[in-house]
Image (spheres, rainbow, N blue to C red):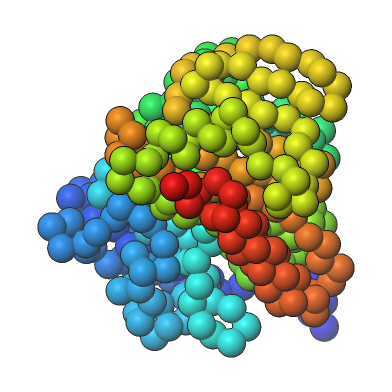
Length: 349
């Protein structure tokens, strides 16, 4: 009589869908999915807006994903430099990981060795706007991370330096850049293979991207992030300087811990009195961190024509059943912060 197969021995069917720019057909990215069921959709670069990689960007792929019951959808922008991951929730509705969630999902798995690495403690390079959840994931797994300004070029520069020192690494920012390799095409192939292997392993454990995402929020606290375009013609510099010189505290009922002014390339810890210089280069960006865990980042771009507000905060998520309520609570909390900031800083006369 044959022995019963264990769950690990049973081959689990995995299905993936790639959503790619039409100029990538010769890259054969689908070969990274050669051992699973797969579909590929090529989009017309002239008709698709890839400025923001979000739910709307992947929406054209979700009809096919539902038809084939895809376990994951991976999409890339026109340059193959940015990635977005889609997945089905328990109600069979397809959702996407935002850049923060995606970075947490990938960082957690590479830290625990899911990606087949034989090197311990890979270096994680993270954009400074990303939530502190990445910091927690890396440090709690005895890893090391380095901060970086956002952008493919900035992440690539640090990653290359680490790899030259024989240090395996991975880099992320809040704009959906994810790097394992300095060449965009090779990087895209590695990322597709990485996501596939992670999903296959999750399915073997009777899990999904959704459940893995929820469990990360339980283990490392549920982080919420929101970004707002607060550009006001003729007032952007005034608003930006107000955050730098009179950072909000009492008005939002928060105690300010650290202010990092990348325009002047200095930081000040108000609790310890410690001051110092930053080493990432000058940028029109100021970052405020509070004792509660709230992080406010204000970024001025395009020579003062655009001004963005990035918020990050966390809340306890005790179990899977509390996930929906915790997510709503952190969403509401961040909206209240925005309203308060609008009254005292953003809506300046």
